[in-house]
Length: 351
Image (cartoon, rainbow, N blue to C red; front, side, top):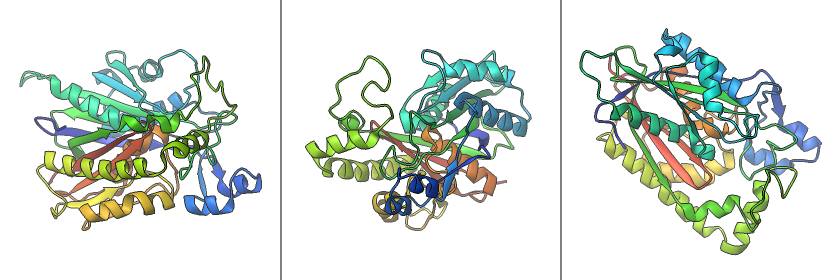
């Protein structure tokens, strides 16, 4: 999916708490094996402790709006994405984020596409902005994407609730503008997304439907549902689909931007924030075949997987590092249960 004209990324940012959860503590408590900790490759991940996930999103959004010098009442649409519990049972966290920011003109939309939520929100807001065709004299239209997740005990074990992934707490935000304007740090050229619903069973397993949250177990246990899936189907359906999906979103994102993997303008690739072994076995070999000249950036060693926030966090890190160089481009990845894979193509405008 590509806009008819580039959508500007005014800026992007991330809020990380000061608290840290350490892998060594999880090992000492018997919740995580040493070899699994080594495979993850994270010494620690951010722990938000008492900060609620929507408040983490608000903190990230305020930083982005302040950096852009814009008031929240200029926003036309606000999409908030999340993976895990937001703090209330039946409630709209997107409207809370809008209210907390005083973004009272904006249309708040909640995006619940698990770990791919931030990338899905980017695509939807990009499409929403592109579908509005203001007159030449009208002001630009602004969209804000936020994510917020906190993987708190007792319902979630950030170190042992899943295979190959450790979960960190964060809020992220990115401000989009159409038409793009001078001063926008990046241009969003395309968003490519593919899904394989045949894999939804990996996060359902053989459990019957429950009338309440965590009705089967006291903690979220993605390992249990994945073991049940693997007993029935083995590893081949997922590994084949994962390779195929990565190749597809790379090719589609680049083609929509008028590029291919050999284009010298493609200089950086931002990996999803998964464990080191997962990236080394399932992502890096596939990407090396397609974008071998570009530098692969593993920016998640200090954060772990940020739930719905990986894609937006990747943009925030690019902005903070001044990457890519003017005139160059980068790919930013996200993937999540369902399964869904997304790839954003962004360009640093020539100054």
